[in-house]
Length: 279
Length: 269
Image (cartoon, rainbow over all chains, first blue to last red; front, side, top):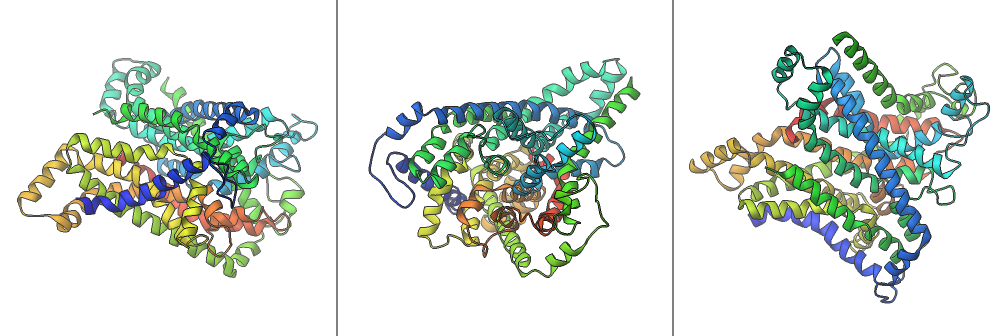
């Protein structure tokens, strides 16, 4: 048995537990890139508690994650319900809807960057041609609208996962249960609420968890589209942590920034797993 | 009533498909244009000149693109194979444990997902440097399976602990199957559809990673087509080549996986 377990345990713990231990050690020092630094105890965390930039990044993370999540869950459920009953050409439609999930996020983020560009960007040119705008609007020029751009890209990228999980949940409802409800005169909304919705709770909880964890790591979208700008107004914790560690060189501070939020993610993970793992 | 509803359905699905395809459509327009015309002049929503296939021709003659693709395939196939083998053996071992210890082990594995790559990436770089594999495909092959295995083990463990499956395994054991024989002849065929689903998950993990790629592989020699897309911020003089590389480099694999998602997603639900 131990032999069978070993590869998984070594590969998972080796690339997670060991780096994690290193990470924790770094955050208790004043290490910079290339310098192991001195032991400083909890000073990095004390600094973060007072750092306005970090607090701003925390609130951006909550807004970015929360808003994206609400949109992904509602849009994903709507699309899943629309896909639930069979129709001709359903398989290619489903496949095309999955593409944003499977196409590398680095690549589509670069495309979105150009689409939202102020200089000859497709959205600006389109809105000008339609007469909605008179001159190009700088979508990523102010914090609020730049954050919305990031949310839009995140939603585009993450909705297919919700569709996939929600649809699997919907399909666990036997077709004849839905049909007999229809025959008995239950309206579409009532059928959804009383028959389909209960089958969606576990998959949507799982989708929410994956969305929350995934959005934290959504460094690519932020890094490539706004780089945290303008003026740090779209930095989320992971992008700020990375900017601090890699470009600012403050390895210890950067890693502490990311590590400080882990307890919140662990709690979310355990809560959702209990719901999903329920026998 | 039902006619109106199907109208809404058509509308929802049409809008969803159009939005899904929008960035790909735009990338295709740029990939089919020479120079930087498409991103600087004319209507960005349509092709302003007859399609130009030169970018794709250049790609097929480019030793760089060939290298990116070899690296991409090595890393993707390697990650998937290692992760599936490790997940299957682990799931089988765990399914033989008592219910309580099984759940604890699986929960510990899954809890690793709460530690974001942002925390782990830089220490991982220190680790792969010590192992002298920084800036090689080995660094990625070391880092990626760990992202697939926890979910893979959980999903396969759930499959193997279903009542009918348990009975089948018990029956095989009574008939004398054990060890590797049991794993290859009984468990593997049972798990095949779930393994296909996990393979798609593995591809999605590799394709959507940015941080590990960015930190662990800095040079052009060992990078994948994803790394190549971000390494030089898009060449604004000749963006067509780079977008053609993205579409041709990742598009077919992404489409192939997308085609099979639904068929196999149910295995993991």
